[in-house]
Image (cartoon, rainbow, N blue to C red; front, side):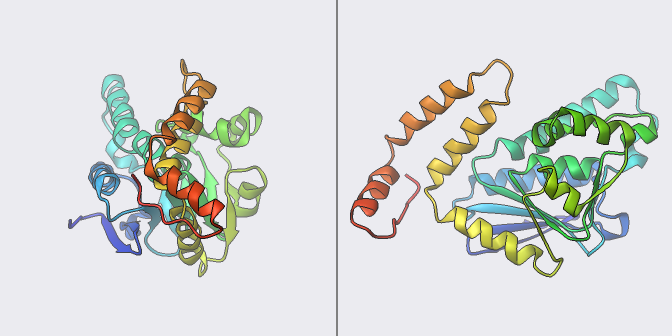
Length: 260
C-alpha cells in the first residue's frame, strides 16, 4: 500500500515503518495517525509480517509530538474525541497487538512521539535521542496515554517529575530509569532493532502473542493478570508449536515453529 506520510519496507518478515514528515520533525497529524492505523492493522493480519519496527525519517527526530496546528479551535468535546480516537486507532492498537513492535528512536521523542514509543513493546534508542512530555507548556496534558504508560515504565515519582516540569531527558537517563531498553549509535539503531526482533521472531509466535496479552493484563483495570497468565499458559497447550518446542528440546535440536 502507498502512503503519503509513511514509508514501509518488508525484509525477513520485519516490516519497517518510517514516519516520513521530516520537514515537520515527523509530527503526528491526523493523516499520519490514520495511515498508521491502516498500516498496523494490515501488518497484524499479514502472515508475511512477523514483527514491526517504527522509526522516523532523518537523523533529528523520531516524532516531535502531535501537529499542534490541528489543535486550534477545538472545543472540549472535540479534543476528547481526538484523544479517544488516537488511543483506539494507534496507541492501544500497538500495545495490544499480537506481534512484537519495536520503536527505533532516532532523535526527539516528544509529546505524542514519546507516547508512540511507549506504546511499542520495546524501545531501542540512538545516543542522540531526547525524551519529554512538554504538554503543560501549552496548557495541556499528555493525551495519548502518556500519563498512564510513563508511570508504568519509570515509576510514579519520576513520571510526575517529567510531566509537570516538561523537561527533556537524554538517552542515557532514559536507559537508567527504564524508559529505553538499549542505547546504541545512530548508525547501529536500525540494525540492532532488526537483530533483536529477529531473535524474538525465532520464538514461538503464538507464545509471543500470549505473553504480550498476559503482561498487558496486569496493567488493565478490572482484569486479574495472574488469571490471564494461567489461561494463556493453558491455551499454549492447544497449539502445535508446544509439541514442536518440547520435541526439539528433548531431541536437542533447534525448534521450527509454524505459528499454529
